[in-house]
Image (cartoon, rainbow, N blue to C red; front, side, top):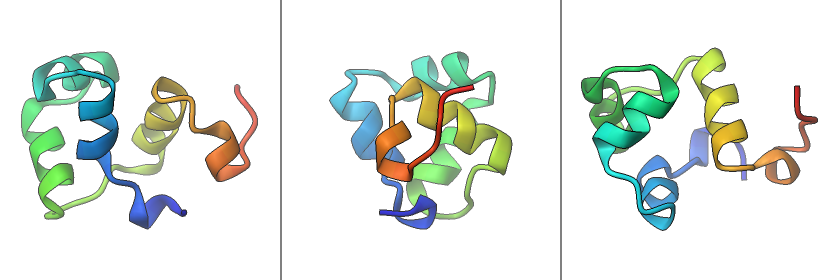
Length: 66
């Protein structure tokens, strides 16, 4: 799996988070979460890093924690 195939909605739902809760944890707007989940846009690299950290995806992307 790579970043372009990251299913943010699936990760959020597995973590039992609402869109609003995820937005708050990432420090982004609710609209950003909706855009990402609907495929109308993608997170920038900074927000991808936040997603990797939040959902503990280090092994999936072969990245080391900061």
